[in-house]
Image 1 (cartoon, helix red, strand yellow):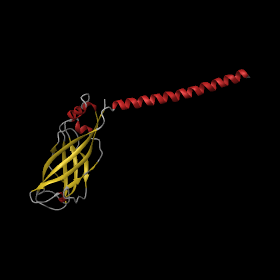
Image 2 (spheres, rainbow, N blue to C red; image 1 turned 30 degrees about the vertical axis):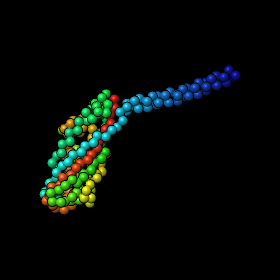
Image 3 (tube, one colour; image 1 turned 120 degrees about the vertical axis):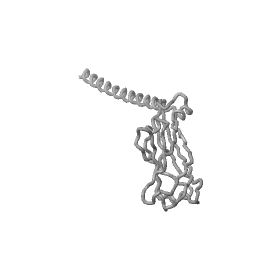
Image 4 (cartoon, rainbow, N blue to C red; image 1 turned 135 degrees about the vertical axis):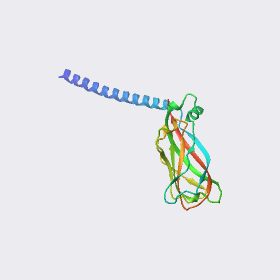
Length: 195
């Protein structure tokens, strides 16, 4: 009887020890995975700005539908931008690209119109062998000096594996006008890379 009881206690102790060992191993494996993941993120996410000035003719801009402006090459070389951050990384380490900010600022116009002649605007990104992707929208604009866009938060990594990338602007006017407005595009792209 004593022998059977000591055997039961021994089995119970072994099960308890196995459970404790399993918990310790699980904790250790989870901690190692966190350490490995943090080591892979040694280059923190960073912003790549893009700013340019563009002239948009308004003679044919519609008040009922959208009119597309000429394609605007941005040609961002992310390989060079990544290497500026850390020479050990390249375009091959690119894991994510997302639009983080986009706005249009009024610069000048031939007949005095400002950005409030633009009621709605949509911005697309374009690259070879990729379908045009909507990345930002602005609706019901009344601001004459700045249009601030809402970003779609879409992943656009494949559009930036090449330096042949561009933006397309679609505009709906608030009124019919014949003018040419010079505007400054301010944008930023959030970049993530990993080993």
